[in-house]
Length: 105
Image (tube, rainbow, N blue to C red; front, side):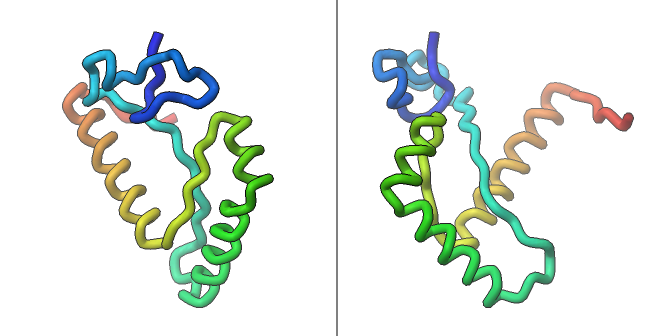
C-alpha cells in the first residue's frame, strides 16, 4: 500500500509515498480551490483571496481540513492559476498518450 502524494499522509505516517516506492512520476495529489467567473474585477478577486488565506491560516480551520485528509495551503491567485494550468496540461498529456476517448454523453 502507498499514498499518492509527494509527502506521507499525516493520518498514515507509516505508509510510504509512491515516490518512496519507486514511482515518483505517478504522484497524484487531490486538490481544490476557489475560482471566480472570468472578468471578475481584480479587487474582488484580491478581497476573496485575502479572506480565504486568512481562513486557511486559522488553526481551527487547519485542524478541520487536516482531519479530512487535506493539507491547507493558501497563496496568491496567480500561483493557483499556474497550478490549474499545469494540471490541465499534465492530464491532457495522459489522455493523449493513452488514447483516451472523450465521453460526449
